[in-house]
Structure formats: structure tokens, C-alpha cells
Image (cartoon, rainbow, N blue to C red):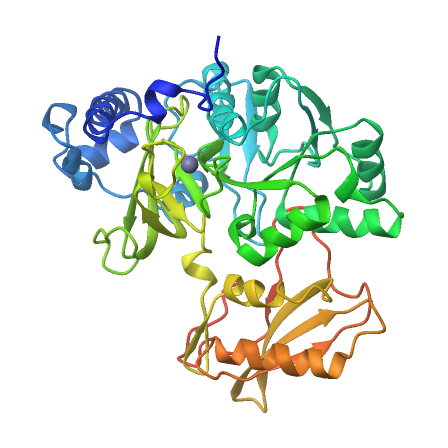
Length: 452
Ligand SMILES: [Zn+2]
């Protein structure tokens, strides 16, 4: 049998009209099931005048009310521990997960059934297979296997494909790097930040990863997997191809993946999700090529119906044929481009951490960095970028000057103070790097108070 480049050849190459029809059928079933199983959501649908019977075109999706994270969390507080969103009795659950938890915030808590796990792994299979991973691969997971769902589903996907899986939980970075080389791992899964950290560790150990066995990295957990400079750096240091994916705890799995053609973005798994892109302020849909917030509707989650969930992720959708792999699934150009809430207003200029990273990562001399916002003289917002430059032969004066000019040039002339930080003084991350620190007394200068 000739091997297909697609995990699900029929669906991944389905003409748009058939894909629309498939989504419509699934949407109707999802609404029907939600009405029957979840009184809380059923009431919301009823109040909005939505019934399964009234869904006759994909546009009817827009009549369904949004589900927000705040609403989900409030539901958990009012109705602990899961909130009123479960569509099945707790006894059917086989696994508990929660969001990785920004300090001080209530985590989202989810349950999964056996059926969910089958689907969760299936979604990751689209991504792994589509990036060229096959049964003969040995896959190392640089992941801590806790209550954060992370790569759990990917682990099962690899077993489903038939790969040899190396679960690298509870190990030091040194231990992981050594095991990857010793066991001849051909695929490594981690966050983009941690892929760089392992590469630094390998260098310190005198191990040349570029000539090692690893051929592919699957990145997830941070938007950086699609930042060109970060991705290029990872690919150079590992001598391997890096593919971006993104998922979320609310869904338990990924909804987008980069194919082996590496189109500079990620295909949306459109036979299992409807991904809308809207203006975060007006909630109106935006066109192809325009930046907006992604809103997800999921057909596969068995324990929790996810209907029009406001993700706060910023994306730019482009048509599937922008990539020449033959998939009809639309693409998020540049993957997840950050979060609606990530944007910082500094002296009237919008600053996105992702845009800063894209510029900082162009300079190979920089090992780690941090963006810090603070209030100067009690009134003025200042932004500084702290960088670690381990190579003492580097002319740091011209480096900080050049970087400051490049950052200002990309931000309407906003002044960035670039400073050298002591080696290993900045935090290192295994999961979801948090490189922006906001120490301002009043954020945004318009009375917007710091919330965390
Ligand atoms: Zn493609």
C-alpha cells in the first residue's frame, strides 16, 4: 500500500463545499447533544432562540452565544469543582486535567472519558503524521507528565502511529539531552523555549546535536514555534526540522498543526473544529488575511460541549491552498500570534511580546532575554529588554545599541532600554515561557489597573 502523506486523506483533501456540509451536519448534532445533556448550555441556547432544528446553514453558528473563559471559571466557582458544563456523569471520567495556571487565577478543570482520549490522540495523529512522523520513529517527550494536559495526547498519538515512545518526565535537562542522544531519538517534543534550552545544555556538555539522530521536533505550548527567527534558530541548533502545533486544555488536544511543507503557519483540523476569526472588540467576523481572535467550536470533546469558545488567541487565517501540500484545511499564517491580553500599551504604542521576541532572536549572541515594563519617576512608562550574552568576546555595546534601534524601528520609534543581564540570572522555562514582566504602578497610563 502506497503511504499517504495525510493521516485522514479523505477529509484533509475534501473540497470546501463538502467540508462545509460535513461541518454543518456535525454542528447540528453537537447542538442537539448539548440541548439534551447540559441544562446550563441548553438554557443559553434556548434564550438565544437556537435549537438543533433551526441550524440549517453554517452561518447559523453565529446565532449561538459565545462561551468565555470568565464564564467557565465563574461556573466552577458557583458549582465546584467542574462547573455546570459536563455532559456526562463524573463516573465515566478516566482522567482529570487543568490549565497550567497563571498564579492567582482559577485554573480551568476538565474531565475526559475513554472516548475523549481516543479523539485527543487522533487529533495529534493528524499533526504528527502530517509532519512526517512514522512508525519507525523514536519519539522523546521533554514533558513533565502532570495535571497539565500538554503532550499527554501526543504521547498516545505516537503509540497509535506505532512509534517507540520515550517518556522524558521528571528528568534534568542534562539527563534528557543524554537520553535523546544515547537512545537515538529521531523526534523530540517540547516547547520552543525548552528546545533552545536543551540545545544550550548540549553545547555545554560538548554534544553536537546538529550531527545527532534527531530529524524532527514537534513544538507546542507557546506561540514561538511559528516565529521565523526562533524556529530557524531551533532548526539550526538541532540540525532538524521543527513543526509547530497548538492546543488548549479546554479541548484537551491540538486544533492546528504545521505540515511537512512548512508553509509558515498551521493547518486547522477543519473536520473536527470550526475556527472563526473575529474582531475582539466588535465580535464581528474578519476576512482572510486580517488579524483577529480565534473562536473555536469542537466536535470531538465527549465530556464537555465546546461551542464558540472565545480563546483570546490572535490569529490570521489564510486559505488552505496557500500551502502546496494538497490539504484543503485553512491555515493560520504564523500560527498563534499571541494573546489579545498580551498587548501592552507603552507611551501610546502597542507592544506585543511576540514581536519583540522575533527581533531579539535574530541575534544569535543572545542566550535568554526578558522584557520589563516599569514606571519611571512615578509617571512615565518605560520598557527595557534584559539580555544574557554568555560569549565574552561579543561587543556588547554595539549589540545593545543595534538591538535598541531595531526594536524602536519596529515600534514607531518607542525607546527600548537594552541592558546586559548577568549570566544565568534570568528565569529559564520548561513550560510556557513568561518573558514579560509588568512592574508598572498604573498600566497603560489610562487608569487601567494591574490585575495580576
Ligand atoms: Zn500544508
